[in-house]
Image (tube, rainbow, N blue to C red; front, side):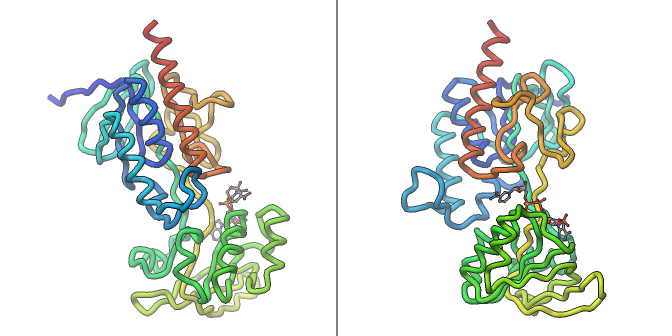
Length: 316
Ligand code: NDP
């Protein structure tokens, strides 16, 4: 018979939100256990230089920052485990969670900090060069540096795509932006900035048919104008995708209120509470707007404080 582990505080996910929650929860003697998830350290581990996190005047690499956060959480005895939660049952007072190897956990409080993942087009050729590390990326700010003085392509028409296209335009000789409709989704100011940038060419009504490469590295893309059906090949060494993010909330959907795109809804503005008492959320799993390491860390702190108060009220 499998044993059940009883915890005061379970933290699911190990980005800046999870580690900050762990530091606060451990210091409050809640003996938190963290399951790191499929990508220990979260999205920042795919980032090069982080220059906008206060307290690092010289900047820090994403992986280094995550190692430091892990070290800080361990210093206060957070039990950090590799592995991930595959199933939850939040129907009762005790929150049941199962790990990938079948361990059953009964937690009084759960902090969800599972983050979000970048969306991709899903083309076979795109996935091939993504896995090879050969020139497909979903983060221009992370990887743009590698394409200095080269030509790149970016797919998308939202604020992220505009922001990233503009970022790339400062590094690259030319940026081709592929917009699938005849208009931007981005705010007017962001779209105008892109349209005014001389080395950004915008192709409206254009979809990607195939990412082209030499077997190792991207060499361009074959695209089609969906109105005229005309096909053309665009040379590029970097193929960037900026078509939004998918919050990692699938396993919670039967119990936790999500919005129409899967982000967890806060039960109460200005708190980390979800609709389930004792379950809190921090970071990108509930943040479609800011998505920054510092905002994730801030909400991680809120979640641990809310969890502490919940436990105090429950046991008083
Ligand atoms: P959005 O969901 O706003 O935009 C996604 C874009 O990708 C849309 O233009 C969409 O096209 C396009 N797209 C989706 N799927 C495909 C596909 N398969 N092929 C081609 N194109 C596709 O995501 P963002 O990440 O841009 O923004 C998310 C949120 O964050 C927004 O609220 C945004 O305002 C905010 N944000 C704000 C910033 C700022 O203010 N500085 C910076 C970055 C983000 P279509 O329009 O046709 O649906």
